[in-house]
Amino acid sequence: MLSEHDARLVEYERLRSVFEHAPVTLSVTVVNAILTAFVLAPLDGPGLPVAWVGSIVAVSAVRWIGGRSFLGLSPEAVARGRWATFSTLGSLTTGVLWGICATLMFPALESYQLFLALVIGGMCSGAVAVNAAHLHTVVAFVVPASLPLAASFFAEGAASRVSALMIVLFASALSGISLAAHRKFGERIRLRIALGHEQRKLSETNQRLLQEIAQRRTAEATLHQAQKMEAIGHLTGGIAHDFNNLLQVMIGNMQMIRRLGADNHQIVKYAAAAEQAATRGSELTSSLLTFARRQTLEAKPVDINALLREFEPILLRTLGATVRFEMVLAADLPLCDADPAHFQSAVLNLAINAGDAMPEGGVLSVSTGVAELGPADLAGNPDAVPGRFVRLSVRDTGFGMSAEVMTRVFEPFFTTKAVGKGSGLGLSQIYGFARQSGGHVRLLSAPNAGTEATLWLPVSTANATAAQVADKPQDMGAKRPAV
Image (cartoon, rainbow, N blue to C red; front, top):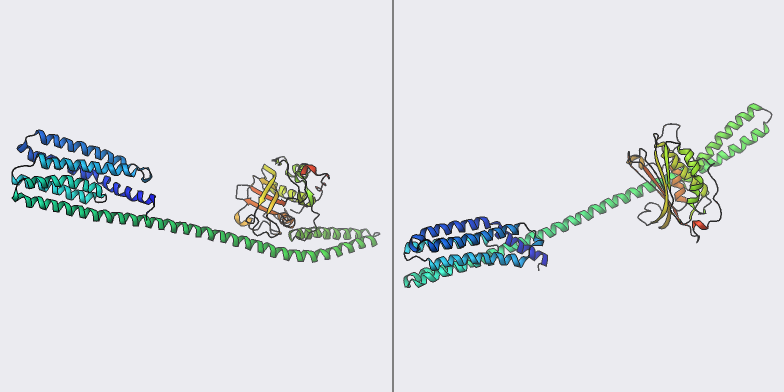
């Protein structure tokens, strides 16, 4: 059972077949009419043949104009019943005119009668050949064109009645052929429509399959990255913890040596240098512990807007005069659970990296807001729970990073800076701080398109707003992060 749309499309294709052949069909009709009138005019006089030809030409012109109008329409814009009626009435009018010719201009001489019969029979056969897609159009011409001719032969007497019967049989056979062709055409169009539906279904299925494959590859890549970072975290965390214990022993012994050798300037000097190196090593291991999410955090409900306002002078001094600093803070921002010192250290790290990416100057934008993150947003991050988060975005207009660099930016000691310009621990610290705080971090970047780092921290469970915070955040600007 065809749908309404498909049935409309089948009818449209039937009529389109008729109107596409109309120029040839109508031209043959006019030419045959002129030749017929030229042959019969000496018998009947020029008056009636000329008027008859003029009628044929007028009707053919209207049908041709209508057909051109139809072909300019889309299937959806076609009024199916109206155009089917137009085609049928045009064919019927032409058939009636040929029937009039067979009645009013029927010649008395047998040779002329045979000529007229051949012309009308040829016209009926041609109508079947080119218009069989639309049965009504064919029958509307064949019946009124052939039956008056049969009646004229029948009126001639017994000898001509056989010819009349043959014409009737001929018209019946043409109608049967037209019906069969009509059905075959409809079946072909319906098969084509069904094939189109199946092709669309196959295309949609392929598209869904490609999307699922792409999603699976993305999920696999995310899982692989998460597993890699987790493995690096376990490795660096274990090593850093043990190494930090050794360094603490060294620092303690260096302090004892300094006290015991207070009278010897050289001993104090060398012990202080060793203690300073061990302290620097302890700071590095502390950064690794932050990445491994084993650092001790003092998380509490904080207002990051207040922290950023307090920290703004330090950021301005860090960026220098060539970088324009913009800060857009959301109003009524809820509190989030975070360690204030580590938060400010993360912001400073991001600002330093942004400044290094804009050696010739640019714009650094810092903004805050609230976001709702779902499981898809937190894919590969088991430390965060879907829900509401406070958002911090830091965007620069620097030279950006390639896709290859982006896959490694959070790894400890990975850096694109020159030797001695950075330790490669800044972003790894931010990564560990965000994960250990139950939050999330993401970088978006492309070569010559700048970088945007977004840090999400979970909204505090404390039933308070930023405006109700009584404790002023501590100034942690003196704690220099590793970059």
